[in-house]
Amino acid sequence: MKEFELIDTFFKAGSYQRKDVVLGIGDDCAIADVPSGQSLVVTTDTLVSGVHFFADAPPEAIAHKAVAVNLSDLASMGAEPAWLSLSLSLPDADEAWVAAFSKALHALSEYYSIQLIGGDTVRGPLSVTITAHGFVPQGQALCRHNAKPGDLIYVTGSLGDAAAGLAILRGQLKTTQNSEDFLVNRLHYPTPRLLAGTAVRRIATAGIDISDGLLADLQHVLSSSGCGAQLHLEQLPLSVAMRESVPANKAYDFALAGGDDYELLFTVSADKRTNLEINLANFNVEATCIGQMTGKDGKIELRLGDEPYSLDVKGYEHFS
Ligand code: ADP
Ligand code: MG
Image 1 (spheres, rainbow, N blue to C red):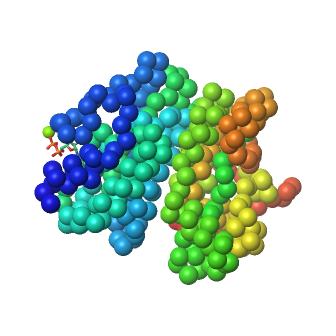
Image 2: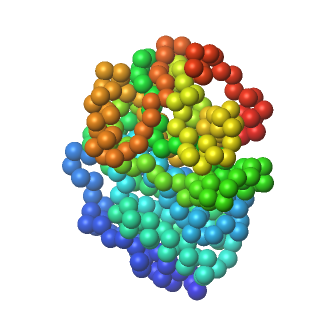
């Protein structure tokens, strides 16, 4: 199959259609309208074979992750996704692979009501670059630099599951079949927390998605905002599967240092706490307060109960 046939058959056909797209796949550029009063929010992420996924990973899983990591970035800004473009580098025109990949991509596009509006297809080592475009009401984007000392720190969902899933795949962790399925699934099929982002954007001061681990990503918020942070480990949200699979100190290592969870972290002024919790309940979003921002520029202080806690350094390096 020639390049144009491949694009027409697998990417133009079957893509979800939105009314704000004036011109989709097929011309030199796509044309789309941004609603008035909204800002355009744009992000790109590349997944490379052998670096971000195993070369023989199912094409459906690669498509899912490529879309999900980009939508997670939009979610962290409080944006709603609208359009995608896809740059695909393929070692050969393996039609079965492209068919399975595009089917999964279209299914996700439909689920999130987003349209694939263009891209590029080249021959080369397998890699997938997606650019996601979304909207946020003007002035409401959640930026990292706006966190203030005294703000409460919240995270969505549960932490460390993807890292535990990776440990299972590497043969470093054994658990029950149920927990294994849950943890490995969390690694392969992350859920972008879009609803959480929109639920908190009017109230929160800053937001980031946790892709490299809680400590690493919180550190970005500290660098941008000039704050420090204190975390209370007993408050870290741990899944049932995590609790069942490892002792508490190991779970803290996974939660603090393990990447790929794609949960959101956001900060909120302490006097908005009730307002925030009502909004979270309204949107049916689960989020847990795990600490607060401090004035200690750039420093993360860990506490377990009333005691300072030092991270198992070997555990930490294992992830980095
Ligand atoms: P050009 O040479 O004008 O840049 P291309 O041949 O690269 O155009 O692409 C033709 C059309 O197909 C364009 O509209 C482009 O956006 C779209 N396209 C190419 N590859 C992909 C892809 N992998 N997914 C979605 N759209 C694609
Ligand atoms: Mg052109």
